[in-house]
Length: 283
Image 1 (tube, helix red, strand yellow):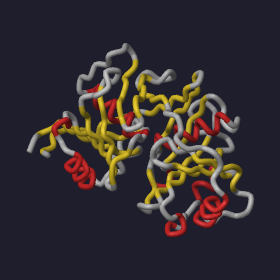
Image 2 (tube, one colour; image 1 turned 30 degrees about the vertical axis):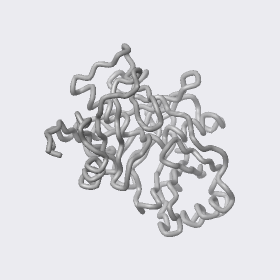
Image 3 (cartoon, rainbow, N blue to C red; image 1 turned 180 degrees about the vertical axis):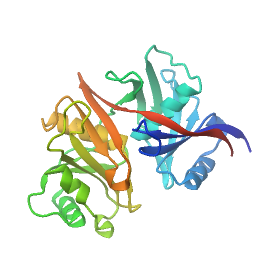
């Protein structure tokens, strides 16, 4: 058994208990996969991460990202929360101003947000799967969300690792009112997005998002990977401008805010991070 520094942080919020919690275990190079998976099941958070030495010379650290059900190649709020925790523990990036994270999808860049220096942002990785949802999949989504005709304005596979599909609805109010039929959703990981009628000014949210994990039958509070690929989709199709704020978590009593910005070919996904727990864990 070994002792490790441990943080539990709240991501996509500057107010504790209003974002998405993340557990971070430091110095995890000596832990095997079974131990990591067991601890992730024990924390029972949506994700638990483990900091390890990089195996790629271009990376500053390597991270393994686990849900209670297994390992993920990439996830957004673990990327920001792990980077924040690594920096808070004294981590020093090789390149000035940019941290390079190694994870299952490869190398992911993290930096201070261009609009707010106290906020971190990661460069959205490319999608692994895109294109419209197949007719049978869309029909299942409409049935599971109990949507009327015309409520879905557009739909797309937006998978950058976790397996996301997404639908664009006609309003944020309809998104917030959803009560999914979980068995009808099946195993699908579904993002739902809708515009706020008066959003988009300053830090007011332009869009409302919800993330439904069909296989686990739960809703994720604030989801960086989904916001990343949804922003790539909405900006590419002209539904969203080059910078906007997305709200997520209101249906769960949270108040997550995700800051999206396109710079050249990159979409940067920004959010605040606050520590809630600091200590040690024996594994």
